[in-house]
Image 1 (tube, rainbow, N blue to C red):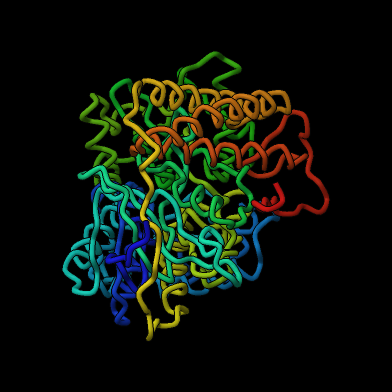
Image 2 (tube, rainbow, N blue to C red):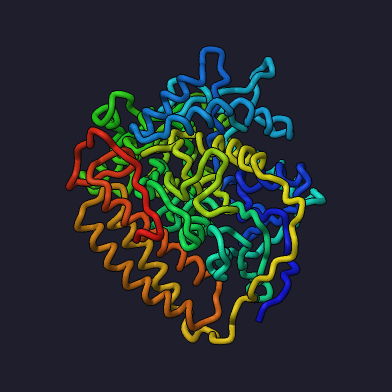
Length: 531
């Protein structure tokens, strides 16, 4: 049955993190009628979890070229030079855009931005709001989203799939017509029409057993874009944050890079430092090096964790610079002004994603990807700390500004979601069991250190899971858990396939079978039509 879709918008933004919020505001200010879909509450995006800050060349002794150099060093010769220059030179303007919206950035006594330094940076260039920058930014932007007359916020709505012209056998190049979304309150799959869909759903940290990401980070936009015909790049490069709080009652609490930037020391339980044996930069080495060093020491000595010690700094300094970390650790019985913090590495950031140009456009006309969902080329083989929030703001603004206003958007005939052949699921335990199995074998086989054999085992398990989930998806009503599991399996397959293609160790991808660097590295490109 075909109906005229009532949910028509000039643009649809999927995801309520920083990239999605900036895009929605920019589009709405230009007069677009915008729908912002988020699968939980507006406040539940990963951006709110960001502690460190937003990197930009604002210091007196800093220059964009130095920021570019640091980014390219961290990216291990795989950063796209044009994209890196394009994004980083727009960094100061991005910070000013946020400042104009009253973001409470930490200031110096003379009113300038206080700049901190993080691993891999040669300068102090990280603008921050104490140690809860993401929450401070989102706390200001989200009320603007809710109050904007041009923005319709649809919470508890999860993306199911994009609707493209080829899916409806329409002539011409493939283009986006809208999307299907699950309304969790009613259980119905709704149809939304728009010529422009922004995928800003974040990364895929929940692929792994241990992650700093919120539960929403299930790779929804990457998986939906792939199914719609978008290419992906560099999915093997998953950044593991070196320092996640190790505590039985702490869920995915990140200990900011800035703790090491302000003098934090990594040491073994006996107090012995070890980073100097792994890299001359010590604790200020890029994240991939620090994460592998911690992983090495833990496996070498059979440890459950290592320590990060900032207690040598004055207590007032620690409480002033890291109030959130201090209070959170204190709630678990840890006084970080007096004792070290037990930490472990955890999956943190997806450096690859849907391939885009410098205006966020993917291979499919009308599908725009921004933020962690996208691959712009900025991050290369490893993301430099605090470049992610910067990329969110810059690319959301660029993608929104490049969009032509749809002056004559006519009613679109789209098919309703077909539920005529499905029934209610008989055993939900199948979903939870497969979810747990997936995350554990991805952690064991496709984690910080990889081998061909481990990747082969993962690929075999993924093929079996894919068959089970496809059967389940075909025969039963969809649920958020099923949709997330489907997306996680798709993204996991992309990660494994990309890792199998890279026969070297570079950046975040370390293989025992290929420990050396290739002389002419290239991005890993996967295209749906070629697989």
